[in-house]
Length: 135
Ligand SMILES: [Fe+2]
Ligand SMILES: [Fe+2]
Image (cartoon, rainbow, N blue to C red):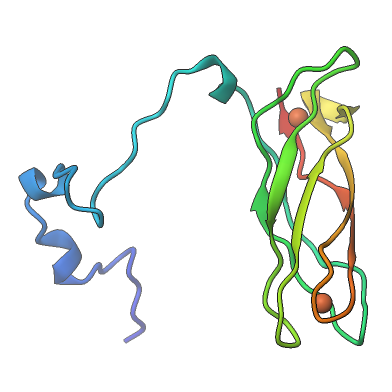
């Protein structure tokens, strides 16, 4: 029989009493509440893909942008993170996206071009478009 955690969840997942599941002191069960501050409202964009190839390897850069930052030309997003660990090291990156690039169906994307930090004697470039989102 194939183990399917959706159809047949293990008993341990079903046996958490509701009162314990609501225990905000338990770090394994705590779910942060949504903040209502103005800066935190709005959409985000996922980003993923590979860096340019340097020294015979690439890194992946999965992540999510910040919520919108308004500018006179349109909104932008901030993104920062670590690449995946490849060839014995990681790199860090930090940048702002372009302003929105309209797409069909009310979606838009943003262009990003980042040079990573220098690690193991080299840098990589991350270049491409964020995942589409509606505003
Ligand atoms: Fe590298
Ligand atoms: Fe956006």
